Length: 200
Image 1 (cartoon, rainbow, N blue to C red):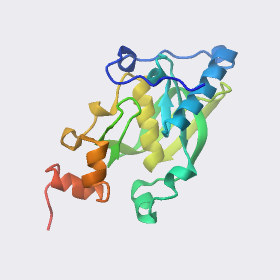
Image 2: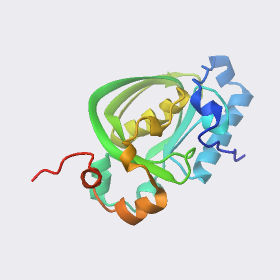
Image 3: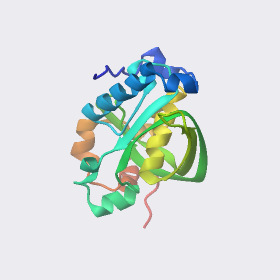
């Protein structure tokens, strides 16, 4: 069942979500919620969806970067972003640790801020300890785009959205992003916007 994705301004997006006990995770209510969130994410389409985005203040998110989403990107773009297909999986009650604090700058969008995007600095590599959909403990080590997705979704579980971290001068409609910036390397965009000095 496709669920309604709430938009920024809804109080649930600014609350820290509550942890799920293992017995609840294994129960039919949460299992059905996971199935519905997967369907909702795919139909949006998106690469991640956190429970607060569908109005549920729970420490639960689904993630999937499907091969069809990356097939039209150039090898240079994929390499620049450190992006590759990611199979569907669930993170519950995650704890995140920065492994490599060096920042990567890229445009991010959000299903709860429909029609907008901005450059957001994120740690290059992270480690996440969480439970999966079977309430089993797992450790995820991620770099590049995958690390970005994890940070974005875990922010949602802590009441944050990307506009809290964005470089505000880069905030734009997705229409203007496509018109002016989508074909440029992010560093060129940042220079054009006066976010970093131009180097000869």
